Length: 476
Image (cartoon, rainbow, N blue to C red):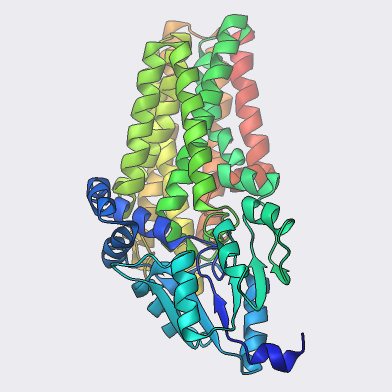
């Protein structure tokens, strides 16, 4: 097919999954649900009047920033080349006209658009009919199985970012060109599930360590099961959190590369995986104990409350994060049925409050470096740094004080065989907390202290030393 002939044929480009890697119907629902979870009841009512009406209603209340949508870059480069050749390119989408207009207005790729409105869902045969009203001879780019209905009558068929069903169909019905063939790798899924964040759930092992139960086989297997229950639940909530934060993540220097924000994993796939992980976690929890299941439910409730509301409010977010860490210790104690020291819980609350403030301060430092004044989706600005740092360093000192009280309490109760050895942990903790805050103040801290600690040799040595001392105090 000669170039000059192709250039005379208008190209119609599908939006969801083709031009952009995401799906605007799902995104509009997520934004609406984030604002008001009860919107789901309205969605059922709107859907009874047709899918087009549902899309129209959601587009009115969900203002998606179409400028930051993740694109299929290989295909986008192709479109730019075609545009330079003078080819007419139309956006042909089943998404609502509000989003179609926004995309066309914010790029010079498209000549015009056709889209769904409040009465018509422009998909399959409806889209083909609309395309033919503009041009009997046309080229079409799509990504899903339903697009093959249009490919059959297209002068040129272009498959972009194909779904599994589209790939299968393309072997039966060949297409002219294919772009952006990719599937989420195991590494991509590991990033999405935040497998490195499972280390936070090692806090569940703390009661096993401090109670001296680490020599009991049954307790060890129970705590391992509790660890995986919490970890699977945490990964499902990470997916939910990323779905809720899609827009704010795309505006963040680092978070825009997260698999969901970057479109490396589809919203549908992520939702299915999250549901599977959640179900497995609950089943494991119920097999352990009623008390552990209740704490897991409390953790889930607090996490959801944080994701939907609390994270937007200054101060409340870091306090909630500290509580979420401390709940893990309570869960470990409930799993093996041991009591938790008051001083240990007080220590955990203050040290995790300090680390949560490290996270916020490091984010403000990044904002300052990028010349930003406000954090999108967070009630923080760069002027808050001094106050947050003051609270963070004070919390670190209070954590050290609570740990001293914890040691003194164990000297009196003889929970440890050699509780005096625990005093060696105090200077180590003092060094580590000081190191974390100095790195934060210098702007050298990762916006996730856990990630920093995994990569920082000084942190790894200090944490390992503290664990070794705690075990030694139990067995000597």
